[in-house]
Each structure stands twice: as structure tokens, then as C-alpha cells.
Image (cartoon, rainbow, N blue to C red; front, side):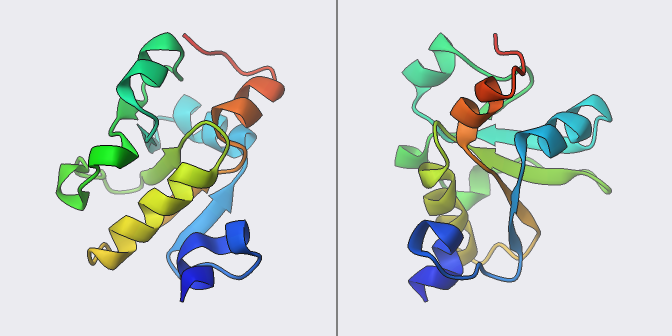
Length: 120
């Protein structure tokens, strides 16, 4: 079960509605206005550096009820520092009954920066 929820973090598959996506894909979705980007890092991490438009919902206090409505045609994407906490957040969402598609940004904000993508 842990493999299904956390995906590649434990070397297994992912829950059917949880997918890994590259920072480049997230950037395309952002540019097209097709993403709700959730930063699950702590508030101080988000304040120090963030992806423009990301909503901060820290894993430490995350509740699936906090998720904003996902507009039709938009993608829900979780990101963190390196990719682990977004897996935990996805697992919490699935365990709480979230059935929509969840995308995890591969490599987190570190992967985003490594691709030369902008942060604020």
C-alpha cells in the first residue's frame, strides 16, 4: 500500500490518480493557466523562495479540505523542496478520499531551479 501511495519514493507504482510530472511540464501548464500549484513546504520556506502563483499549504498542517476548487481542465500539482513531501501530501489526500488527479512535480523546487526556471 505504501508503494501505491508514495510512488517512486519507495520504488513502486503510484496510486491510479497520482502522477509524477517534470518541472518543464508544470511550467507549460502554468503558462497556459492550466494548473493549481500547491507548495507543501513550510511557510518560512515558501516566504524565502517560491514559484510565482504557488499556494502554500504546508504538509505539517495539510488537510484535503484546504484544497481550492480545481477549475475544469486544470491540473492539481503538489511541489515541495525535493519531491518527498509532495508524495506524503498526495498520500494524505488519497487517504482522505480525494479522487481527483494529483500531479507531483519531480525534483521539487530544486528540480525547478536546476532547469533554470524562475523563482520569486
